[in-house]
Image 1 (cartoon, one colour):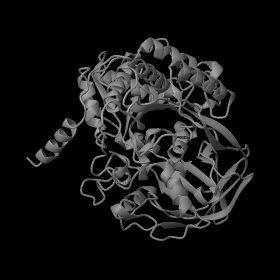
Image 2: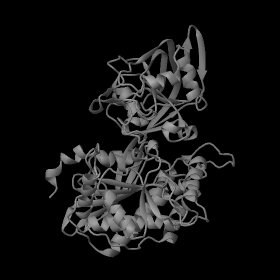
Image 3: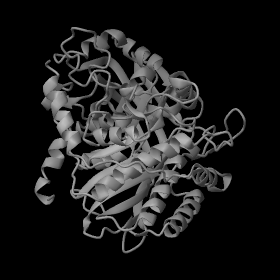
Image 4: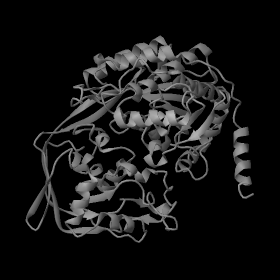
Length: 553
């Protein structure tokens, strides 16, 4: 009976939420037409700053206007400028490590994948000492510090991917301290590189392992040496000169040169008593040219003003960018079109805009956003979080769509980040109206909750919910869970961030339309009520939201 208080608390939370009435608003054929257009060759893979961006922005502006939206960007327009630093490692880049006069070369792409996010013409690192720093995590609230005061100035930090308890065995003290198999933000590569910069490291290497990263090596190398970041006042303080992934084999060989064993170090790093391990006698060097410029990219943002509480809002969003033109694949195709990722989400945003316009003014404002540079590190939504055009403390919820599934109707909806906030209960109510259930993310170790555009808004306290087809196979009407898993696995292995992610005539978007309908009924319930969905106790985002509680009535 020890679960009864929690069950009663969840019941009370759900009971306090507005009623959900099911409605069908999304048209699979109309969504299909949007995706087919965005994924066409004319859009060149929708890379930020390219001719493909210009075509994409023009198309989205026309669609937002046709849907009847009002501008919600900068200076009375639909557009929010997103200035980006764009870098590209030049050919001939050299990477190596040396011990006792013996040098081992590391090949870009084959052994490591490096970029630089500092606006400089050349990066030259000569014989820098290396230090293995475990998982590279500093988490005082969890009683964890991998660095133990080690001086990293001028040194190279070598780190493991994911969290300290990702591979913990039953009975180990660390088990559960970082969410077990569910990745926390400390497990993300972005955090690790940023922490290395805060510690003064000149470079950082993350040892790649597919289970811990949540994706294979081909996903790591997909950008082709190209880097993006928001323009920063002092990039040298916030970014290491060189941030890189290194393959497991190359990383193990590097550690072995210092007499260290990767598997043994992984066990040691799962202890709070772990101390950084210098790679005695081993140094790292890098030398490459770097082109850099500023690219002006754009978020597209529209709104339908609320009639009684226009300062409060509900947002629906997706990202418009993909990976542009890259190296030819096995079929000679160079365009990485991003049809499912995230043409499906953009199609969903447009369906929601049309439906709310047809509904008429709601009490709260509804906002519709198409973000740039998600594939480059959630940069469009990151900038929006820093420079919002509506009040984030008064944003009741953000609903994000990223890679909706294209395999047909399902008996359930897979939820990324299950257990974070009260939107979970609202989703369950809405799904029940479709005779569906909610299934938690089957692969929380992949950290998908921290890998999409809702996350920058969550960092500012906004309650968020993301629908993403990559969180686990849905229980499809045709073929069940096995067929759903087969769809996810095939897409992830063959098409994710590749030219294969192209529009297909045999897609069945009725399942994607079901999911868009869920967000409509949830968004409508919040936009026409005084409810404020709450983060649950234990969520890392609850304290941020609580700081602004006085601004919400």
